[in-house]
Image (tube, rainbow, N blue to C red; front, side, top):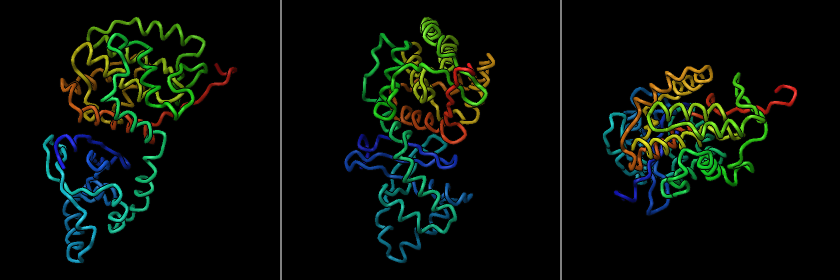
Length: 307
């Protein structure tokens, strides 16, 4: 296994711990880094050593699990690829149960459930955007393109997939564009220039203020943003370089017309690797990670008398 057959990279997040995975095209399954799982469950400062001890015990006991462990090259924090012990998705539960850690049950609940949530199903669809051409080049940057992205991600999951909302919504203390003004607001956003980096970020910030869908705005709009960057600047965002909390705080600040921080975060994360599948896959994983737990899009529908 290797080369093109192992080119799909995924990053899952368990309680803010990164768990790397790689897709085996030949056998149609994911392989997960066991060292990442050990780090997430045990919070050991030396997860490789911890796993090495468990692995040696498996070897001494002639455990069948030992024979199922393979080494695959995964990208590390320093950007280099290293041989990493991995187990197939179907073996993770058995392996995790051999780890003497208090968080194993909680981890397994997350591991088995995360693929079946709306986010999990939508993320699988997002991965296939790499091969699709759902947005015509002439439509990039338009509201129509954002609707197409949203419909692709959430079709079959939400009955409003791709549809502009007709109700006013809020998130926390933020009230998004009132429903009765949304159509005209979106038209004005669509007409905004998108030639320079600053113009594109301004357009992105305004589209976020619009929040045109009942759910799934952030995940759709970040893909929409990258499409504009790729078309206009031949660049895209390496979302893995942007910390979740920093991103959320920066976007909250834009609601008070302060776009300074989001500009800084995006600028330092720009890359010209627009044809790099790993950059795209990581971008999807981090984008969905931003919406987990405290970053989740907890949208409230505003009643008529509150508008």
